[in-house]
Image (cartoon, rainbow, N blue to C red):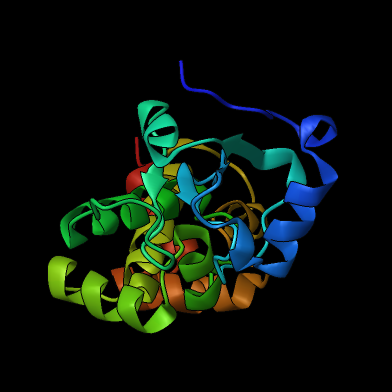
Length: 192
């Protein structure tokens, strides 16, 4: 196991936490921080959105972070080795599949993956053939189809469970994707 100083909020020294919040480059090379929810590690000077303190772990070296399966941030490049774009696209797909219920914007997704929105959009589309927004909708529709076919939940509840705050917007998107309203789709799939 690598040399980590902190696992949760109470253990992170205040000076290191303040360095992360202020993107203090004077600490670069002295230690690194990892974010447990994304599995990414950064330099203290990284300009990414500040993480939740309870999700931060401190590592003495980049190797320590990598030995615990944290990936180097593509923004601040804390390690000599950088991930190929294909791996970043895979991480983006996994993140979307895990968080599709949440309000996902390109900016939110880029922050979570430590990429610029421009790079994420361009690279994701080049490698997958669709934009992140189209992929989010695809995952949401797949999950909605499963719920419509296997449950009797109201369409409003299903809309909320797959990430749509507005049931009418969900119904419009669903009909655009399938050619059927959610109710028609359920009727077709639940026929005896």
